[in-house]
Image (cartoon, rainbow, N blue to C red; front, top):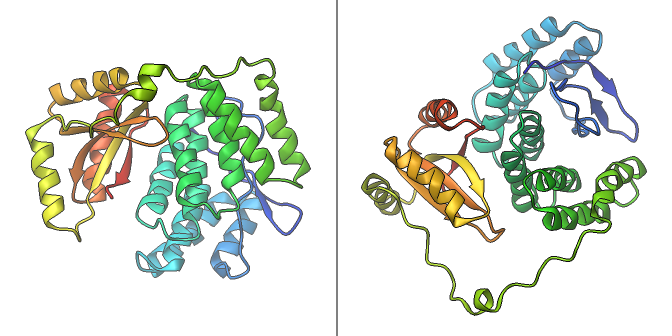
Amino acid sequence: MKLGAPWDRGTGGRSALLVVTLSVPLYPGPPVPRLFAQDLPAIRTALQLAAEGRSDSARKLVEAELRRSHPGEAAYVEALYFRARLATYGDSAERDLRRVAIEFSTSRWADDALLQLAQLAMAAGNSASALTLAERLRRDYPGSELRARAGFWAGRAGFDVGEPHAACAVLDSAQAEAAGDVEFANQVAFYQARCSGLAPAPPPAESARAAPAPAPPRVDSQAAVSASAARDSNPTARPFEVQVSAARSDQAARRVADRLTRAGYATRIVASADGFRRVRVGPYETIEAAEAAARDLRRLVGGTPFVVRTP
């Protein structure tokens, strides 16, 4: 997937970034990222160069800023984020955005990176991953000004994965959270039109209401059990896992997990309160090892497996 670059000043004190020229049409356009007054001068210059069509020079400035700063510094994270936004190809943009969202999850750019990753996943046809990423933004960054826009993308993805009632609910939330933004409200309303005439969600069956809470998901290999024990014995360790898929049913998640186990991966299923069963492999002690595994998993099962930190 090739990315475009021009930057354009928006209204209302924010900047509209026309970055992602996606290979499939997305309506509406990219979300509005935030530029702060204390942004690095080199970044501001790079954005101006990109707006003038001098994207190569813009990328060189950002690369120079990355070399000057140290990983973990605010300047480094900011430059990493904007290197992704100025990237020529989607793979390199995705790699940098994942680093911002995973390694620097407390930075001011992390929620923005998650939203961009959700858009890239939608463009790649992986609505389940887009839904997971948008939901993560809403869950992990409840005070984010991008929460409403994440709800918009979660709603779109929810329709695609066959969850129209959940999609309509999150679109309603997005509409309420972005009160006063007329343009955005119109964008949400475009998809809310699909909710009219939708039959009410069926009530849970009596047997489901009476059923005991599900047991914790079974770990699928002895290797995964050993790895989990190692994590418990060392609470300061924060290894990485690769999330391969998210499914609504135990059966669908189990099919993916069994396939991965047969391929030699230590696999586990994480049941979450949102109803999804997330299939993950690992753990990996470094993000580089996890990213390498994610690339291998893309070839094995397709989709867009991505790296997450274990709790």
